[in-house]
Image 1 (cartoon, rainbow, N blue to C red):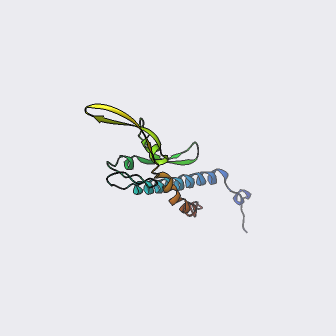
Image 2 (cartoon, rainbow, N blue to C red):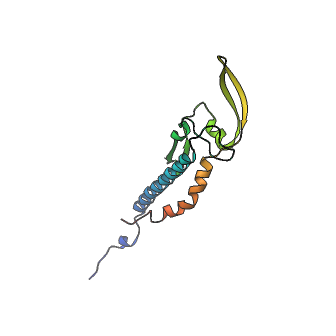
Image 3 (cartoon, one colour):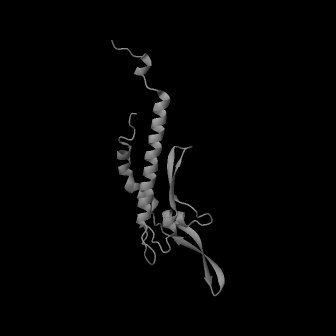
Length: 145
C-alpha cells in the first residue's frame, strides 16, 4: 500500500522562492561580470585619441581598472560601470559625449579650458554585445533539489 501526505503534492513556496532568488542573483552576477569584461577588453592601449564612436584608448589604464559590477538587492538588478571618479565627469563624457572643463598646466599656471567631446562609448556596446547571450544564461539556472 502506498501512503503519502497531501502536502507532498504542492510546492513549498518559501523553498521555491529562495531557490529562484539564489539563481537570479547568480545569473545576474555572471551577466554583470561578462559585461564588465567585454567593456574592459574594448578599451585598447594606444597613443592619441580614439576615433569618435569607437571605445576610448587607454593611456594609463585607470578607466579599465575602475570598471566594476555589483548586484543591487533593492532593485533586483546588476549595475555595471566605472566607479571612483568622484570629482570627474570623464566616464560620462566618454560614453555620451558633451562638454567638460579641461585643466592644464601652462608655464607653471593652471589653465581651465571648456571643450566639447564626441562620444566614445564603451559600456553601451558591451551591453549590446552581451545581450543576445543573456537568455541562454538563464537556461537550467534553477534546478530541483
